Image (cartoon, rainbow, N blue to C red):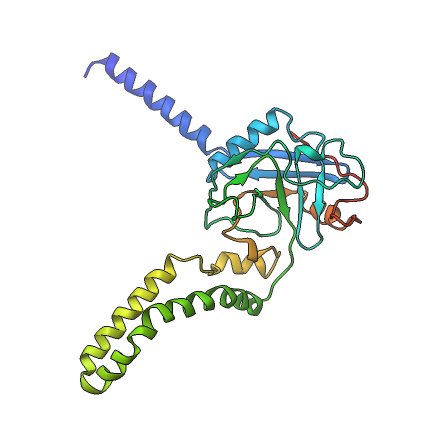
Length: 267
């Protein structure tokens, strides 16, 4: 290969390395309010949410909207286009500017305190749990004990296991009772088959299992473990986390809207 060919390879390699560097760079935005600012990291691992959220930021979609749903020890939610210049007492919902995109669930990211997430319409009208990136919520939540997390897991998992047991074990029980007496080897083989089916179906179900990282976060800084796997988490507050608590503690009306508007500007 001649010098020209090597130069071309070096140039192409340089472009590739530059592209990889740009792709790996972290992306931040700042959510400004009258109660302080929050610097937010947008995850690279949820690229569609990051891309569409930034498009809306750059088009000033969020500027002038409100944190219109504020529940202490739960979330602060804002960004709905219907909240802009909304008169006091007006109920604000999903907004006329909904922007739905596919969910991007990632086991690494969950509803710890400070997580920024995409709301969505209920599953009865949103079967694929698509996100509405035209607004967002930030988690406050609370601190949990390990025992409470165990209870949450059992509350979700036990009904699933009960249903699978009724599906696979109960119909085979008479045969198992007979084989236990007549043919222990066949009994053990059938038991293994039933357990394999139950284990497979359970593993592909919407069961709940908290990782060590989740347990560490939920038992120290807190969050909302109940929401994991239902809504896409696409970033987190890295500076100004105290602002979430300040806004969450504001007095609200019957619709959970702060009595004094909390106006949003995102840069």
